[in-house]
Image (cartoon, rainbow, N blue to C red; front, side):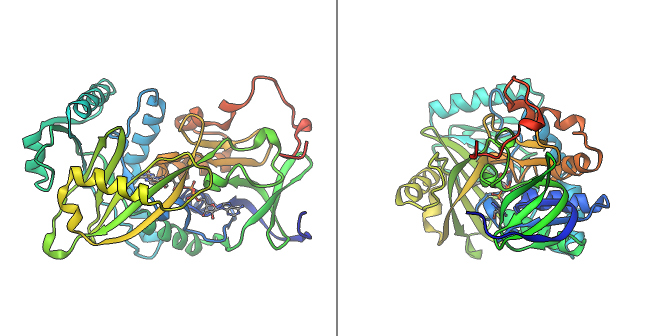
Length: 401
Ligand SMILES: Cc1cc2nc3c(=O)[nH]c(=O)nc-3n(C[C@H](O)[C@H](O)[C@H](O)COP(=O)(O)OP(=O)(O)OC[C@H]3O[C@@H](n4cnc5c(N)ncnc54)[C@H](O)[C@@H]3O)c2cc1C
């Protein structure tokens, strides 16, 4: 049953449902373009960014069949330095922990080496910069690597940022630039005259808006009142992550992100300047479960230990699980839906931190001009629409008809 609705409390040009990094960057960039913007989230600045490692890994995360996404990833990576400088200033001098440290992807056995050689060939065909190194050369760069490392790829352009600090800076930048942040959940979308007109909050208050952006991460498909044809096709993909701490006496433990595929599973170690070492991540299709399991922790430590044996000496400071918003093609959903006034900014899956700068720019353009910029056309939600034409008058709320 819906809570009692009280009349519209405030009206904004844009109302963003979800204050994770994607909703926040959308709100911040839209307000910079002169729009009056509100964000609704019980915990703005939380979400998957609380768990994420923050690798900006356009090159090392390249996968077969994802060449279109590669273009967007590279564009966002390119914009990162300027984005960080502008955000830090807008947030009153906050430091988001951007580190231009590069990445080393290594192989531990013959199978891993063959896999990495394939990746290298794909990177070269795609015109990307990466250099093949022998095991000895890898260990010269990172002396803590296991002696058995068989070779690796040096990617000097894949950097990192601290997603928690990034999210906190985005909250501050939003509030300082006049975005109204409502610390509560949205219950359902309000549709009036065949267009999105606002949301009803959990306490029954209605917020009116000219346009609504659904940026609720893995929960983006669950907002009530959204017509079935406009529901975001996103699913949660669980990831467990560990945080260790490198005592000053051990520094520098690693100087760049180190990663590998061990027995078919990805493992990475991301060293922050403040001594934190992030070890991730599992990838599990388990619905909304965010339990940290003994098995998950064991596998991460086992694989990370094979890569960098010295990690077992380090204090384990945190274990966490989060949900990546996965889309059917692993690429984001950006821009207008079939319901006029309703936009999506979700489905960023394992690249949401990397894609934050470009998503903010793309969404601000859509919200001010109604058009997706060239670089984002391939990411329209319309790519998942069934071929049969549907008219707005046939729109019915999800789960109702
Ligand atoms: C283990 C792990 C490791 C990762 N590593 C990396 C990495 O190294 N590099 C990288 O680029 N990306 C990485 N990611 C992915 C990245 O974290 C996500 O893609 C990104 O954080 C998604 O941001 P979002 O704002 O779309 O969603 P979320 O972070 O999920 O935020 C959604 C927000 O919406 C709010 N919300 C939900 N429903 C409602 C509602 N009804 N009303 C109001 N608010 C609502 C939630 O409270 C939440 O704050 C990783 C993710 C995980 C889980």
